[in-house]
Image (cartoon, rainbow, N blue to C red; front, side, top):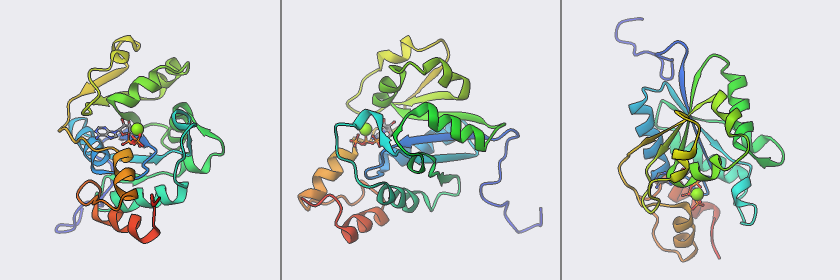
Length: 210
Ligand code: ATP
Ligand code: MG
């Protein structure tokens, strides 16, 4: 390496690289998501965390979701300052409903040798482990379930196959996209719950207005 010139950001420290996958609807992305990804990256010494906005989320078929390009762009804006954070379009470019097993398969195809860590909150891990693909999913990645205010100790972790899911306590941020959409719909402030660029994107595009 040339003295004085820092290593290129994103160059993996590990071989094979250790890569986190942070899936979510990100409608919109908020600081709870960013802290979860940052904490797991720190504790598990990850080289990169890939944020993957969902297409049509299987858990939210009964709900209206903001169009994928807006959610994708807000995710890019929110993650841009962190050299370890990247964003993938695999889920939004795949037609149909988003299943976690497809996300894992697509990321695995892009990073054949990487060690993958799928990051989820205490609520979402319960949903994911309910699916029949659990046994196949564990072939692709370790699962890390982070604590989330309002969702206590997910029993699902205990019922998951031995060693499949780690639980990790992170600083509590009682922030949800549902609450941010509600606030935005009432023109209440969302500053400091989401990154500044996301506050501005929501206002500029009139998202979540009634
Ligand atoms: P919504 O209210 O629309 O469901 P959300 O805030 O739950 O939005 P999602 O996009 O559904 O956000 O969540 C993506 C992932 O981030 C999930 O694994 C979820 O458990 C996790 N997550 C979301 N908010 C937090 C938080 N405040 N702390 C820890 N994990 C979180
Ligand atoms: Mg959610």
